Image (cartoon, rainbow, N blue to C red; front, side, top):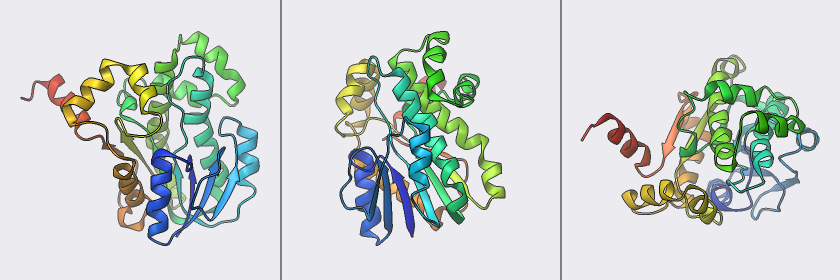
Length: 255
């Protein structure tokens, strides 16, 4: 298979590249930093829509899968960048590469447990996705009183909403899309999440035995990118060691 991936230089992306190359796939990476082990690297700033379109124009299809993994953690002062990279940039790359995705191709996007409230926040997520230019983000952030944590949560809600909203359109094109939602994962940005989310992160990890490994997430991404998951469409797969199940049990009094 020929597979395109964003955010391949570290963490979940690097583990996914290793998993895909282990199966002999050809991997093209779109990333601001040079990743190891890929067949082709296209340097690109995923917060710059025009740069994304120019990067997409540098490759020839067909691709059998597109893995959207680029993302920034919640850091103060990066609200616009988080929304641009984690949501608007990923959608822009999908749209740019649609013409060269092979029939039956899979689109897999790394969302997050942080996007679990996508349904109740769908209107705000749609408002974000309607922005045509990241330059509109500062006004959007001010109007919606978005802090770094809300920016991160919203970015992940938005990619889940986009995936579900476009499932029928993509099916008509012979394509399918799904999202993967990890909780805490032991990568270089784990400390950012612990700092930002505090007890929200530490309590969840304590109940599940700690953070997951990048390889845990890479396995699920590889499955969703493969023909083996052909009947999985528009799904948000929680790969979080039981965090979501624990939260549901708590909320519903299931114990």
